[in-house]
Length: 341
Image 1: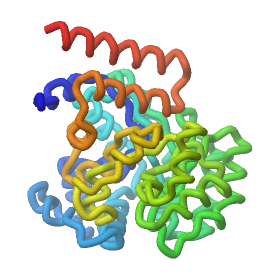
Image 2 (image 1 turned 180 degrees about the vertical axis):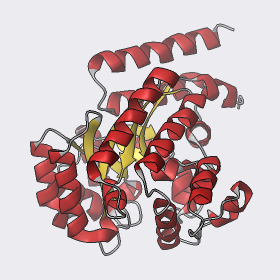
Image 3 (image 1 turned 30 degrees about the vertical axis):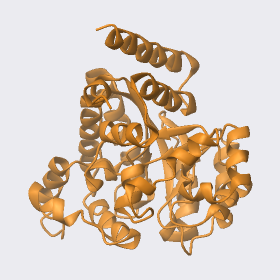
């Protein structure tokens, strides 16, 4: 097969499943750790590679939360957000819906209005300087329970920042049933936010059904186990409910044993709208360009196939129609020029 890495590197892309703190590169994490020397997170970028080696999903959450603990001031929030956008621009990401967990910062003492101001200031500066359009998904950390759900819904609805478009649910799935979060999703949806919970990553397809039936999910984060239920796959395909697929993440957290066993091919074969995402890229030793290369190999795609995959993410996004049309046109123009070489 043709080496698609050069094509992918220049391809205009959108990303829909990528976490705010989880996108902090070793460079950013090391800078934050140096600012807070009481943290157990290494302040050395090389040592972080070993630190970001996970034994299972529970260990990943444990490590993830130590990095969350580095975000203690509005200045930390602003630095993180702006630098994440810089890294996205290097990959030709034109648009991203960044999953933000405000509860994790406000409970650690970051004043809530200052938090909102910091992410918004970084968002506007990033668009002006890098041309990256950022939007927010406010995410309930499931491991923190219903208190976190109520607080996240309040922050989303009452202090809604300009860039906020959706409401999500992350963290562990085992022992954290989806239906209990229905009142908080109902409140967010009533306020005009879109529903994008994680489901079916480390649990079975019933978790995906619960996200659809109880949380009004319009997209599913991961949905890896959906392939175990043909009826669910057919439902997702018929109703055009996208899956936010993160191949390397699923291997790193042991949700899937080996990359060649990843069920993405079954998802596509069933007609499901699949988007490619990086989840927590530096923690998993990847980036969006690499995830496209992995998906292209698993799906046996050429340049046109990869471009179609990129357009899936644009279609599944909550960007306005004019914004969608602009990025799709960029993808088509780039692909035509590349193939004409």
